[in-house]
Each structure stands twice: as structure tokens, then as C-alpha cells.
Length: 396
Ligand code: ADP
Image (cartoon, rainbow, N blue to C red):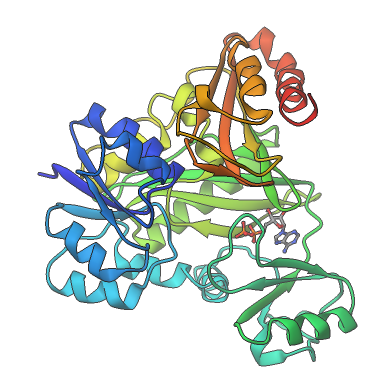
């Protein structure tokens, strides 16, 4: 029986997971580079914390020695080194085998294509250089294209829209030191996400498909459920189901999708962990994505992935100025942050999650807010309520 779960990474995802562990009578331990990281405060001092970078396998070995299973809030790990720990008998969920095809964006595209899931046209830029004429499936390349660093990209860092062969040449030269993926620019009508969990025994639970809205390639808000056709919804659910079955993944996954004007759904990216687009589940579903993840990795039965309210919106609160905070507590906030947060906290049917980071900088995810409709008559006002929150946060 699993009593203690070790988590590689101690950011906001581990912080939210820590809030759910007690419900399931589980203890959590995190491996994180700084004792200022969000999850540490929630784990009562440093007793359940191993200080170390996420790819520090020595720190993982220390954590594994007192945990029943190791899981991930961050996929920027050293898989090969972790393999030695697995050989010694330490258990990882998701398994290292199921993580392998996902950690490099190019290999992930290849894997998705192999298992028959729809993806944008793509190529290994290191192989083709700027002489890009055809995608790997043989289709002719048209500009614009999107260049991505193959590893360790997040929040759009490492993603570039390129509009001409000349700019592609420049990008190739600038980023020559790292492997690159290039792919078709998808003129999507919406971006969607599927949050799905698979248990050790192979059950899969998929939450209602959501719409995610990005600005400058960073997620700004999530609308649950997405307003899409039944065809698009069924296609998205089926992609999530197939993916988790083929991967034999255990745990919660975030699957980012593009919806095209003709109702096709393409996979943009798979994150083998809980995901920003699943935060709405905390207040508005039978069990949150974090509870569901812990259930999966602790080999407990999954909960129904159902909403308990008709609709919700999650708004990310990104940093708008650089400030060093005095503590992790929201009531000690400096700069414009404190006043604005108080105003948002006072709104009805609204829950603020302040991650307790010690410093802000423009664009950094500092908190999120979930707002929801209790009755279906309230659903049409949700969009305006979300706009009001963003206005308070970014404009007051
Ligand atoms: P990250 O891993 O940093 O989140 P993504 O690959 O998810 O990066 O890209 C971030 C955003 O950039 C996406 O949410 C989308 O808005 C845009 N984007 C990425 N790839 C494409 C593409 N092929 N076509 C159009 N837009 C894209």
C-alpha cells in the first residue's frame, strides 16, 4: 500500500497536489531546488523536502529511499540517470518507459504520428537546416512555420513563429547550439485541452474538454467546458483515451490541442503531469486533477472526472512588475499586487490561489483564480466576470 509519494519538482503544481494528499491519507515529499519554492511552505518546514535540482538524480535517490512511489510535477528530468534507480527497484509513475517518447518535442511528434494521432506537419530542423521543403509526411512546406526547441520549453519560451525562409535561416544560426523542431503553423480557431488520468489497472477518466486562450504564447484563461461541436468534443476525448492507452501512462496528463475551422483536432503537445488547463477542477469537479493524479500513482480507484457546476473559467494572474516579496503570504504583498488581489478575493463564487512565490517578474505565473456559475442562468455572465478580474489585475 502506498503511504508516501515523492514528487520531483516543488512549484505550484506540487503545492496544489500537497493540498489534496491529506484527503487520501497520503504523505508527500518534494525534490525542489530552492526552499523558497511554493510546495515547501505547505509541507511544514523542510521535513518532507529534499533540496536539489529536478535533474539531480542523487536527490531523487535520497527521496526514493523513503517513498513508496516517485512522480513528477516537472518533466525536465534526466531519464537515463533515473533508469538506474528504477533498476534498483524504485517505482516511478508515470513509468520511465512511458515518459521516454514525450520529453523531446520531435520524438513526441514522431510517437503521436506512429500511434495514429493527428499532428501538424513537422520535421527535425537540425537535419533539414534552412533547406526545408517537405514535412516528414511528404507534404510541401508553406510559410509561416513554427520553430521550437526540442527540450525544456515552457510558456512559449523556445517557440518562434517564422514567416520567411530568410528568417528561418537566421533562427537556425542563432539557435544552432540546440536541437530544433520545425512544424506547420496551424491556423486554429480555438486551442483546446484534455485533462485525462489513467490508473495502474488501465481505467481512463477524461475531464470535460476545455478551451485555453493564450496571449504571447502564455495561457491567460481556460473555459470549462469548451463551446465546441459534439464532433470536436468526441474527437478530443478519443485522442486522450487512445494516447493514455498506447502510452500505458499512469497519472494525470495535460494534452494541448488545436481545433481547426473544419472541426479537425490536432495534438499540439502532451505534458506527462498535471497541467495549468486543469486547475478549474479543484473547485468545480467531483475530484481535482491533483487528487486524481495521486489516486492513480497510489493505485487507488479513479474518481469520476465530472463537473459539479454548469461552467467555470480559470484566469491566470501573471506578474506585471518585478518585485521581491517579503513572505509567501498574500497579505504581505508589496507593489500593486496586494490591493488588486484583495479586490479579486472579495468577488462572489471566486477562488484565488496565490502560489506564494518569493519574487515576481512580468509574465511569471503568480496565482490563478477560478470563477464559476452555480446555475445555468449564470453561465452567460462568466465571460464578463473574467474580464473584470483581468481589468482589476492588469489595469487598476
Ligand atoms: P510550450 O511548450 O512552451 O507551452 P507550445 O508548443 O505549447 O509551447 O506553444 C505555445 C503556444 O504557441 C501554443 O499554445 C500556441 O498558441 C502557439 N503555437 C505553438 N505551436 C503552434 C503551431 N504549430 N501553430 C500555431 N500556433 C502554435
